[in-house]
Length: 214
Image 1: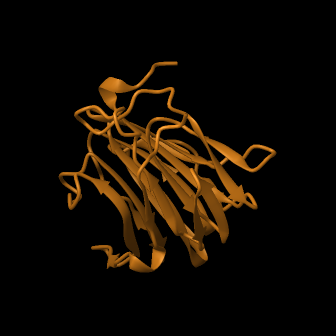
Image 2: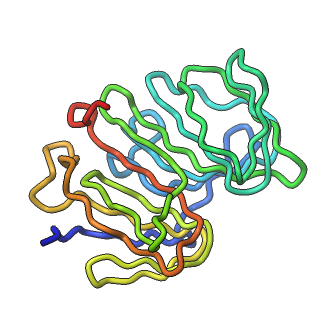
């Protein structure tokens, strides 16, 4: 018998848009821990950014950053690496928050989703959702987020949610599996079903001390 999980619906329309200090874009926070944490005190943060003009990224010491473009295209210079142009078909890229990064959006700007995780306390992954042939996705025991990139419906344990573009679902670890930091032991997997499978992003988060090493 599956363990019931608390699921929170996070509507895109409820997010507040905040301009960047340099005026080059706008950010919308999807979720953060601890709740209400600012950019100096978060342990993890998921946000969307609209990039309007070329400029540098902020520096975040001790933070692992994951970024994926979901609209338009942007050229990124990450440290001394060659410039990479990313669009909404590109894979997620990962880099240290200490590394100097500059972005140059194409005409019309770009939108990306960012996962930032403090290495000392949490581990996180950001991927494009990979649905099985029958439209299911295995939901692990960790704290998870599904971010829709188009309209579709998902169901779990008899509940159903109709998602619009950039709406998200937050799946808390199953009751009884959470540790003091809010993580969960692996193994409490259950199927999440999409009707039909839609383009989406998938985030998993676990406290650093409770993550299985591959």
